[in-house]
Image (cartoon, rainbow, N blue to C red):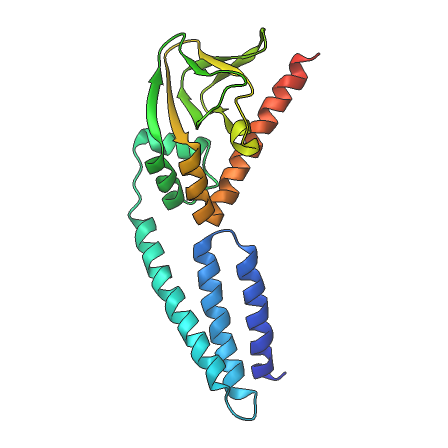
Length: 219
């Protein structure tokens, strides 16, 4: 087999793999390896080396190499408190650790007193909330729909649909929760595609849980 011809196929396969991975670090690593394979092909296979293509591949390698170093430093510097570690392992484990740290920095830790209303049905809702420790009731119309406890999200449907609150949520007991401003969360996720995929997975898992509970209560 012509090893130089193999290099071009390898470059294409690696580029495809880079587009398929969700972790941006692996995307950049695969891109660098693909560029190296591309340089080998464009130097040896044509009658004369395609220097313009080779130079651009070198530029891509340099840019991605710098970003890889920055990302490795960011990830190695991530340290969670016990509270944050528990939240990461139970709800946000599909996030990379440094991505979860970005999400934490954006949020605010708050505490609701017993009886405090967190959302009002059909009213604007500016936040997405996650219950860390506590219990809340959910009401639609005049009907009690159930309760939510640790690990449950509040306001994710409003976030996804960009609409108003779909239910009234009230603290049944003292409840500690994490709150994100929807506008700030949208900006963060729009800048970080891998975080956007991870958060979408969290939302989908939460919606599945709520639909399952609704179906069970219907019988």
